[in-house]
Length: 330
Image (cartoon, rainbow, N blue to C red; front, side, top):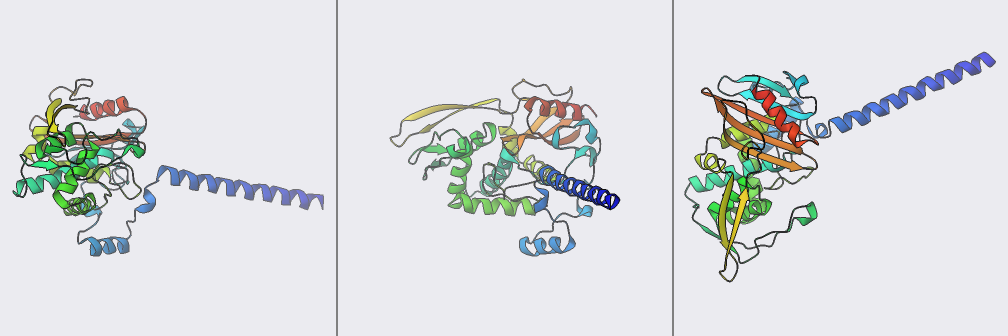
């Protein structure tokens, strides 16, 4: 009887251990892959999304980066995701979590800028257009500083674009969206159509600025496709060469207000150094609580184009160190 009792106690103990281990495993998976639960790569889901969007979704044959590609990922232990590609040869230099959904933060503005370029290049609008601010936007609830532009203020399309991309002004993205499409919401629809047409079908945008939202996500691979497209636009390459940009706008009474915006990329401001031989072209940084510190870049060296996309959770300098490390592998 005593033997049976001891055996029963041991069995209960083993069962409890199994339950605890399972619970820890589930918690780990849900924390480490907090966006994976929104990702479905089943054939049925792919077909459903294709039918809904009109664009084909992720397939291993449609991408140069396999879903499980972890080329040299051990070199980037603290990166949430990382991707470096020799785009001239289509060669993967390093990859980590390239197809895992993530918060893109202000890298979102690459898409905002692409849609704006479509309107500019089609002749529907011009960089010289004077844009009147129609709506008061306040993002301070999300930790953003109050706006400097108010209803009745006027600013050129050019200055909105430069402020958007150099200084990553969140309010300018909303003003541009309203000016071009009547509302930021209508503009975001254009953004989603744009990225899906590029094959970036594991992305979905809810706003034009990139502040965290559960339904606002992308992947490192999709961002590679997006910045590669952005690099084809002369306007964006011109903007991205500026360390600082001085401009002005007018208040509702016509008074001129001078302003200046500075680049958020440390490689451009000389607070970080690129490896010898590299020339930086298109780029976009991003920072939010959910995204951490993010950076996407298009660079050139010896006639080859390189594209990098990466993010670290807590350490901005580490992100730039990782970028240098990846580029030094060439």
